[in-house]
Length: 242
Image (tube, rainbow, N blue to C red; front, top):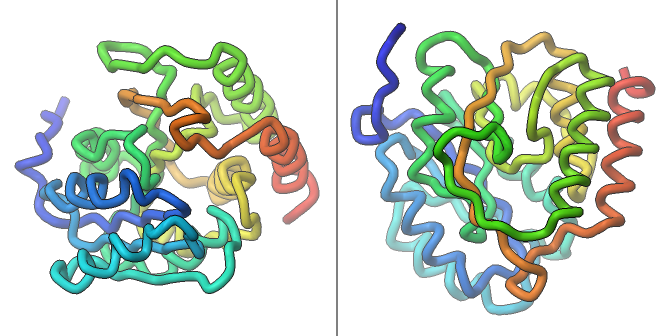
């Protein structure tokens, strides 16, 4: 078995796509942590028309760091639309999605990209529920039940055996994700991307990751309406859309 390299051993090969909406409190910190990771060659930030001063934090960072490509939507269009914009700008061999809060740890990029670098995978999902020694903040029981239910429904439709379809942390070979036409504008992108990855016959791996979830008072945005939309998207992109 080949040895998994540490973050410091991996040469720059990674584009990070970061959709941002009203994250003034955390965006500067997460950008700093992302850029500190050795594999990161490019950081594409798409500000989805934030109204809380996020843009004022981002502009100085983009002016001083050549790896940052900063884009702003003039109207709020949703996370899916921001990812669609950002992924089209990716130039590195591997693309990973990073939220602009502090729930996911960029120091774990090497876990996600190792199966791709070793030639085993085309897509890697970072699972918050896979177990192992990874730390998880204890929060909402029904939120975790909803995630697992949506993952089960998605697995039934795709015939994949994922443990966390709704995870933000997904890494792709660039040519794989850029061939996928993202249609959803909000959080329905997770089941949509999963369905289209399954149909593409890409080699999918899953690795355990840590997770420090936020409360709604701390800025968490996804809600129960997004869960119903996810169910619709599971049916739509697996059984209706070719």
